[in-house]
Image (cartoon, rainbow, N blue to C red; front, side):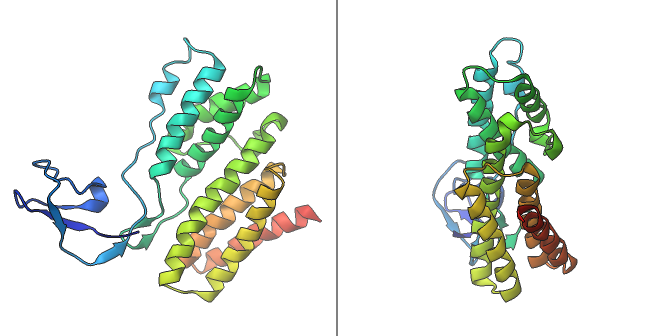
Length: 239
């Protein structure tokens, strides 16, 4: 959406940046009577921090199902606030967002399981330990029991990013980037059509391709070749 990022309180005169607070309420006096004093600018992100400390503090008291459910909900709250256009600038598909989406899907899956396997639980707890810093277990560690939620998570992260990429390209058309984005979309739809049941390495390649798409759009010309190489890896694996 387009917003006026610079705001002024009509009650006390304080000026602030909506991009930093995500609110039209004055940070000094709390008044909601404020006006935008600059031009409308595309902005989809909101101030949000992923903090999984409260969930990790329950490790000795609660079951895996309860912890998985709490982790999924906390990540869901975080990802709902996130976007990738900040004051008109396209941002990258950052590791913390991808980790949060993965933990959301893996946590939701384990919270529904009456009994989960030891490899699945180990993977979940490793992911829980570092997701808020953008740390995820290596793709080679994804256990077979989590293949589906992993694939769906990677597709969901790419879908969220591509929505903002499309918005950005609508305002700043770039035919080569749009073509590359279309190829990424086709692979993402394939993952969704298979309900996430794809080689985790291919799902991971899709995320890298989307990230390099963003880098290409924002000026890194070599990122186009990297994105194509990630997609080629998926296509070669599908033969």
